Length: 499
Image (cartoon, rainbow, N blue to C red; front, side):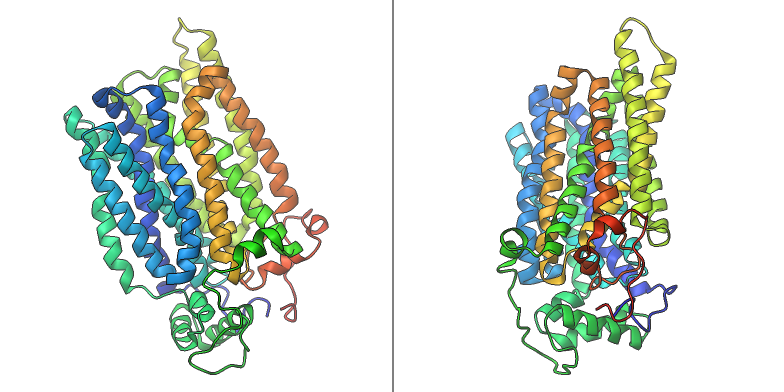
């Protein structure tokens, strides 16, 4: 079936939106942890007397552990369900936050950071997948982008926490910054139990009655629910005319054999999907967002901002810009489409990173002077970079990679994308200081601009438009010879007999 028959394209289901919002709260916790660490590192370095190398490891180790967590999350969510995987992620986060808030030394701090990292891996994989699986095609872009919006909101909260708790004593301030994340983790672990399970996961398990009941809640009409139920049963390998309350799908697997279907014997469509998912996650962080978000105080310091309070305030501006423009992106994702926003965003990254590289290079070439114009340009291009990233590449990475995999491969396919994402995040966050010391800070951002240019070409040729398609239809876009069809900004809707 093409666009799901019986669905009012302009309708919006409040219950599905509420479920996506609650699931995305875990992303706020992750965002907070990322944002708060940028300022906390200033105080941690002073209190614990650690080196720049130890600071880099502290910043990046979270993502190494998140890589492990994301790979485990795919199989876990196939086995215990999407909802309980979110509960598990919340508990892991809770333990990590308590350890970091207590941390009497660097070793305990690293233990807490590693624990939280595993929770990050679970959260980044499961929140977008759950949101995609409960949403309809007309609102999937908005609902699936909520985790990224929540990450940005969490980063903003983290920056604000830096500014507020930074006024406390050195020993107490950074521990409060890190430990307070335990409170929402505990609340989410209980709150998530009131949410429904993903109907698509229930169908995979053969629990048809439960899936149908949930589809009636997250659809705007009985006809829409029936249409979605029909498509999901076909995708799961169940007779679409089956009326049993419990059925045994021919492909029930709890995630077994998925890696073979992804890497060893993928169909041409699955191979293209995997390349697209890995590529978009690779470029999200190789274009430098982690360098800006995590090290923005250092960037502004290099540009000439020397006061600690002013550094933290300027960093709050980064978080505010990121949150505002992701909020704008959530409104336009289902109207403008993924491709248009993605290509516009990436082109903007090339321009803003080049401008930031130029401004910082001018500052470094004149070490004895205070170049006010270069300082202003550095701040403007930093905010401009964050704005372009947040209106396209940031949210679309998670929307796109969570919607393109076939049902059976979705959880573990998405987890592979998240693993690549965390690996690139770790590489950038753990090497940025060393890179800019080797090639100058301006040279580092020129390098990111070059990567962004390559990313634009990758997106243009390999990523078809998915706006308005049901999850069950999207594989067809990659089944076709998409090179020719992707020259336009959208692939035309398929006919009603296409599935």
